[in-house]
Length: 221
Image (cartoon, rainbow, N blue to C red; front, top):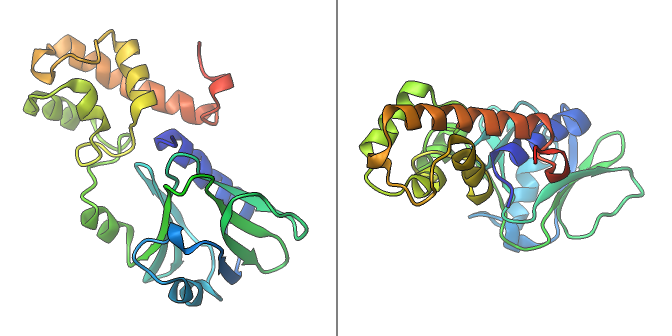
């Protein structure tokens, strides 16, 4: 399942292949992937806009189209982005963004668990979906306070998107393994040393995964 490192890789991919491009037409090929918006309105809002500034928060990607319109993308379990030439046509393309000058950007979902939508701002979306701070933006002091304030299991905390946005099953296990903490440990059982190791592991695991394009073949053994 795409987690924070994967979505950061997707963000950079979009900027590299389609950043600044004008959208001639947005073609919704399967409206089941849309969140709280009709396909006709989605297509109308995107036509003639530009793929501008990007932002990632947790597992969500935001792309500025106009000052008041942002595209939102969540990738579910199997989603990703693919830029192709005019002749290309990838499988499982749910939305095609046809770009000025040729080529298109495709929102790919093999399983229909991802969602695309529109928001007025990333901040509004984050508030509406009750997302916690991004796992890479959370500073050490706030992370330590969070660990001390929760009574439940440490792995559950790491994966709770309302507490920390971006970490899922794969990377929570990696962080806990690197910190030498059992996944079933309770947050209240962690001493200062364990909390510090987990803080270091949180950043180290995410940063290395991003550096290596979240490719399992390139990650440390």
